[in-house]
Image 1 (cartoon, rainbow, N blue to C red):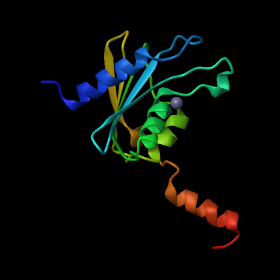
Image 2 (tube, protein in one colour):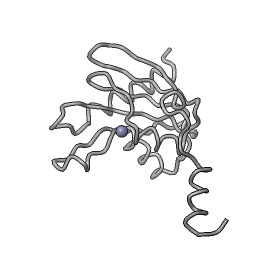
Image 3 (tube, rainbow, N blue to C red):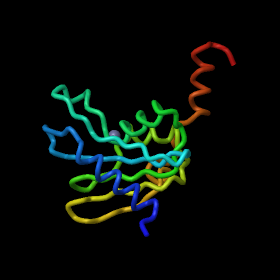
Image 4 (cartoon, protein in one colour):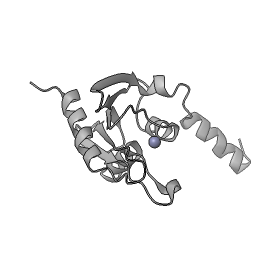
Length: 142
Ligand SMILES: [Zn+2]
């Protein structure tokens, strides 16, 4: 019987098929397991103005948040070659997921899946405490 991780990885592979990557040809799919048990997927969407490109991981996070889910339990990534979340995506994920959240990264061409955790990928993440300190500084009050 297929376990949840296999189902999550399959959802990421399916999302990668929908990637819009005419410039890099690097297709990435992401699937997040929400605390509500739902899979939220995203794919990379490139743009001719490269800075406007969005990664699969952030696309999946925003899909989940727009659907009312703000807590995640696992992330699966599938790509046409070796993949790991970029720094921006790691920080966005840290807003909604614990450091121990497993992150599965599949290289579809090589047939390899690597496993890590969000905390290993982003140690000492910027978080609520740092944001609160900044807010106090901006207000000019303690
Ligand atoms: Zn990214």
